[in-house]
Length: 334
Image (cartoon, rainbow, N blue to C red; front, side):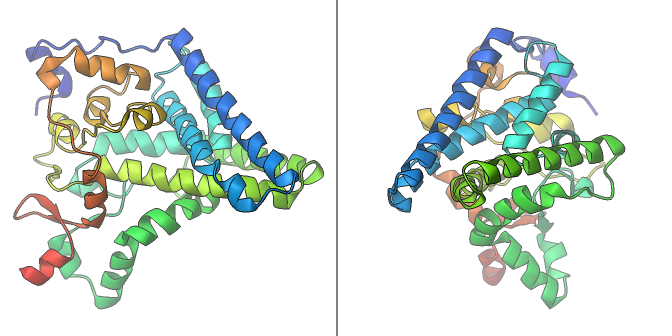
């Protein structure tokens, strides 16, 4: 089994090219993400405090949620230690700050995400850092009740509307059985800081006001974020393989997508649409992914259209016979 580094060296691609982050660019991105986010929350508070209708304040919620997604992208890069130059401590401190704002334990996310990179598209290693996906044969062999549960879970309304807020607001507060002490302490710290924020809000703007401002933002941001993660590994011709045939290069280039988002979405998502490049080399910070793509013609491929991400929402089963992700309706037509 040949590794990514070997293949890319054969293709004349420098793996360390643009690999490390730039401290100046990192700080610029932090300032242009954090400051607008807090300004928008302040505007929402000002509107509510001065008696404007709630729907008027909610007009600013989608924009605030986009900035919160950008903050999560920074957390994501920190988890790969690809931010703030080569400062690992700096990445971990910043990652925890981003985690508090995004209701995410940094070390807990980091662990599951590292596992995700090591196991993506491996049929024998599903279950950590991914979205529950069954093969057609696995689904057909389930008892009726579990089939219903799986159908409910893969329903776009449930998967992108209900699951994300529950995941970020509730489930991220609870350690998993496999978590090590480091992850557990990170969860405790994040939860404690959220409690501190709630206490400060209670004694200043009021608990109800805080919920009215923060809840819609975290709900929108989490829903869009889960969809963003989903489309990068759930599309019609996505690569899946059994462990004996699995390799990192195919998992990166065929098991991860390339979505070319509209310009403003590109900025807010940190160019994460170049996801296959991120899986080829996770040391490249988000603000260098597009540049790496432009300067590496060996890796050029046709991007998915933005609308393809919405069509993929209805694909739910991996068909080993055709090598494609299919919808439930395919079973009726078989």
